[in-house]
Image (cartoon, rainbow, N blue to C red; front, top):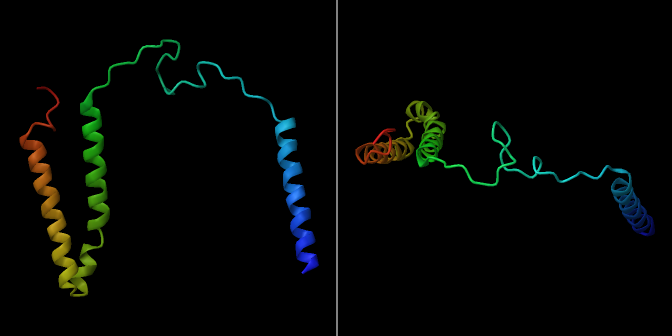
Length: 116
C-alpha cells in the first residue's frame, strides 16, 4: 500500500513539473486580429462590421443534416425485411413518412426556393 501511495505522489509531482515546464518553455502566442477572428477563409479580418448572411444557407444546411440522419437511419431497413421484424419495419416507414411530410411542408411554404 505504501508503494502505491509513493508512486501516486511521485507521478503527481512529475506531472506538475512537466506541466509547469511546458508553460515556461513554450512560445507565447500573440493575439493579433487574424488569430482571434472567427473567419478563416476568404474574409477580411481587419473589418469590424458583420457581413450579411442569408438565412437560406442556414435552412439548406439544416435540411441537409436532417436528411443525412434520415439516410443513416434508413440504411439498415433491408435487414428488417430479411429478418421479418415487422415492428421495426413499421416504425422505420413511419419515420420516413413523417420526414417526407416535413419536406413537403417546407417545399409548400417556399423554404426550398432560393429566389422569392
